[in-house]
Amino acid sequence: MLDELHSQGYRKYPASRLLRSSGDLGWSTLFAELRSHSSCEGPGAEGEDLEIAVIVSGSDEGAVTCKIGGERRCVRPTDGTIWLNPMAAKADAIHIASEELQVAHLYLPSSAFARLATDFSVPRVPGQAIRYSSGVQDGIISQIALSILREMADPTMSGRMLVETASLFLAARLLHDHSESPVRRLERQPTLGLDNVRLRRVLAYIEEHLTEEITVSDLASIACLSVFHFTRAFAASVGTPPHSYVSGRRLERAKKLLTIGQMSLSEIAFDCQYSSQSSFTRAFRRATGLTPAKFKQAVR
Image (cartoon, rainbow, N blue to C red; front, side, top):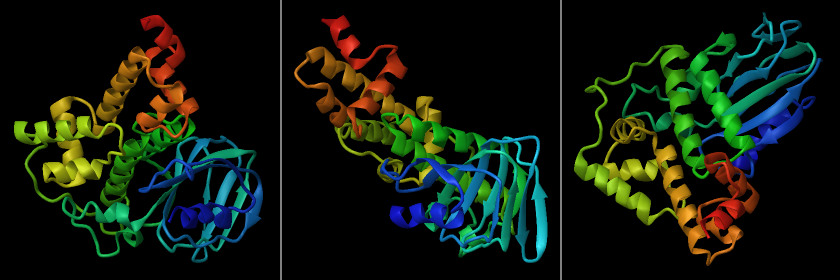
């Protein structure tokens, strides 16, 4: 799946330059790229998945013109400008008349929308129900895109959970505000926290599986709730979203292992679900102000 998603960026934007990719981060619910685009012109290309393109470093000058169904749409490429490309959509032509633009390209598979079926009146083919849009300004989508870019540049202890949640809320935002026939959230009581029994069950599972991959879907299943509802209920109970809580628990585990001093830094990184010691070191320093090695020295 990731290989197919990865090919979309190259096929759709052959004249662009890839700056960063989520291809080796193990994300399964969303694929992301940061690309550099300069003045160019060419035909569009069809993609398998819904694409959200967000300018993160733009220009007040220049223009991006897309020709869709014979209609030309010209947009000034300022920071935060968004394009929404539905599944199987294709621009007849794309013309970029601007100096270098840095753009986040987020690819959402249909499964991201299917996970919302119990909370929204989701259409049969939800990804295709999103309307093509250019020049959109949507602060929520922009903030989610930036959080994904930060995670891609500097992975955290529970980054895959963060992205899993981000993909869910992106899909919900698109269905609610950018659909051909905007869906409504199914009637529910106001978001309440988890009851004590469910909360204890979820927290116990987290403690027992800190050294393994934990997904929000796993936790929602344990609580017998939809992922969307669980994420909100957990945050209401604990005061922080699931990925932040798990990240904090893994940080405490890392501190304990460093204090005991029986494992190498690379072993602790692996134990805490990091792909590399360098990623672990960056995240630990960001959270504590010390590298793992300095922390280890300080507690001895």
